[in-house]
Length: 222
Image (tube, rainbow, N blue to C red; front, side, top):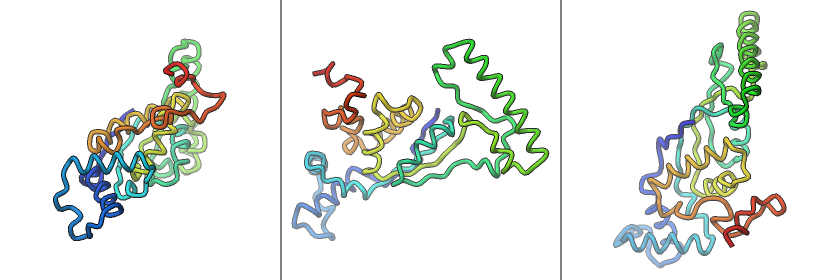
């Protein structure tokens, strides 16, 4: 899996802090960036987190390029609807030699891995044959959820908070959890203050919404 932050709002920490400054002080739009110190930025962002005043964070966005992920994972990803997605098309891109993702549980079991790879080889052969008989947009129906895909995705900061809270959780499915952790590492490089406390609910709020399904992390650390 590869994740790269390819674009973002310039100086995201300062941009969000400026929006917050406009909300909480008499300063006008023309002077919103005047005499704006790093200490001011840190203080305002800490206040936003403490108050749960998330609307200023919607003024910055982050765009990622992702590859080496499965279609099974992207079906989960697009449930996060306040985001924009562009995905490699199976209608226009021929995939006779498609790559595929192998779950760790299968990778660690020789018998399961042998069956898995044999099945993928059979699917490849069926796809090739079908693509020679009908248009590839119909041949693609035989392709598996394991099929590797590539995406470009854009989230605003507030949507990323929600995404990280749910998908960095130990109970999230392994592949989307790996994606979320890599994305979080990327945004921390360019907006360390905004994402200093981003992550699963147990890290962000000190509570767990999973109830009886909890991993028990809070009890262990309590």
